[in-house]
Structures are given as structure tokens and as C-alpha cells.
Image (cartoon, rainbow, N blue to C red; front, side, top):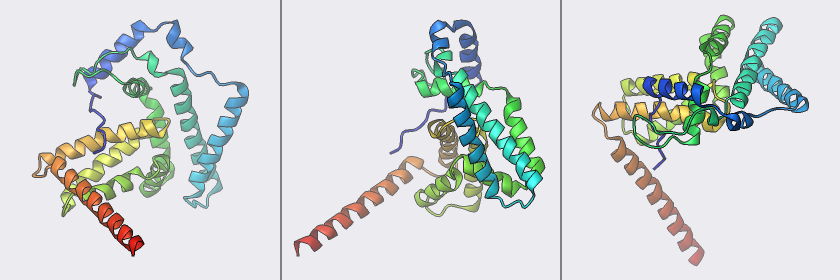
Length: 243
């Protein structure tokens, strides 16, 4: 069974930990920041511009001015996220416990908290700009590029695990996954992005549990079925080899 990402991201937890971080930074946390050389920054900027260009080209906008504007919007956001990560390592959040569970905060927990303190205007600038220039379908396509299609991939997983998934259940699950996707575009790498999705996957499992389903039993039945198929295939292959 996959490891669940604990739903620690409560307002209380974030407020408490960020307040502590403000008063507890030391020289060692400053040293933990990632400083890019001019050469490394130039190379990173070039790669980011290329990625943004490829994402926009996939939309086939057929409007050079709009393409250039959207490309710049996306590239700027990617570079801002990179720089925020570099300037705000997990060490800027003090080690402690999750007030929701009592478990020690992992380095990933602390990194996500540090990134979540980023000014909201950074996210709002991206999303407002995208929606001013693109259709909602095109906006979703860009968000899917950023999160490598995790909404569709995760939904397919639910369809395999949950028997006879209803339209209402699917709507709730998809809505939560789309919230995860939009929030995840403010994070730098797939480890962080997956952590954000885990928060909303936990919400989905809680929804199913409170609406007549049992996530634990469904997941176990699914994994047992996968193991049984693998065992049967292995046995068939062994029998074929022995003949």
C-alpha cells in the first residue's frame, strides 16, 4: 500500500511554524541556501525558456504575440519558483512536530511549508495571465504539462480501485485533483508536487469513506488482485518453460 502523505497543512500548523521560522533562522540556515553562479543561472534560464516555449507550442495558438506573452508568463513563474526554492530551503522552517498528528516534521514537510509561504500574488499572476489569454481547456493543458498529467493518471487509478465509480463520486475526486494540480504549480520538483497531490488524495479517500465506501478494503482488494494476476502469469510462464 502506498505511503500516505499526512494532512498536516492546517492553518494553525502553517502559522505556528512560519512564526517560529521568522525568529529562529541562524547562519546555518543561510548557508543552506542554493547560490547559483551566473553561468548556472543562464543555463537554467535557457532551459526554462525552452520548456515554456514547448508547452505553449503544444497549444497551437497560431498567434505569435499571444504565444510570446504566454511563454514569458510561464517562464517567469518557473524561474520565480526556482529562486524561491533556492532562497528558502527546508532549514528555514524549524524542526518540530506536526500539531495535527504529533509526528516529527520530515524535511519534505518543512520544505513544503517554506514554499507555501510564498506571496500569493505569484500564483495569482500566473493564473490570471493564463486565463486572460487562454481558454479554460488550454489553461488545464498547461497545468497538466507542469504536473505531467497527474490528474488523469490518478483518476485512472481510482477507476481501477473503486468498483462502479458513480458520476458524483468521480466529480468530487476530479475536483479535488484539479485543486491539487493548480496548487502544485507553485512547487519546484515532482517530489514536492506529489506531496501536494497526496494531501488531496487523502481528502478523496476520506470522502469515499464517509459516503459508503471503505478505501482500505477497496485498495487491499485491488492490490490482492494485481498480485494474483502476477502470480498466475509467473506460474503460466514457468509451466511453459518446463514443457
